[in-house]
Image (cartoon, helix red, strand yellow):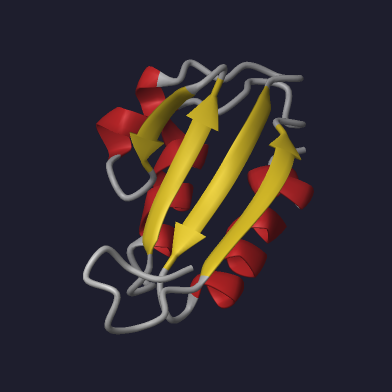
Length: 99
């Protein structure tokens, strides 16, 4: 993807996810997600039913009110987009380390 100025290439990675942990994306997993997201230079977004929020904002992530079974789209845009998607998707696959 070319950025708006057209002078450099901006990488984008997208992954569909399903919230699998029993309590959904409540405060603790949302905080874990935001902490990991902020470790990357890429812009990170989560989408639920067409509503896009900043994945680096705890308020944005919590506003999604994503319960168990919720389908989300994870989007990363930037030089480390692929790595960001991998690390963040791993949190979902491990159910945010909840039993």
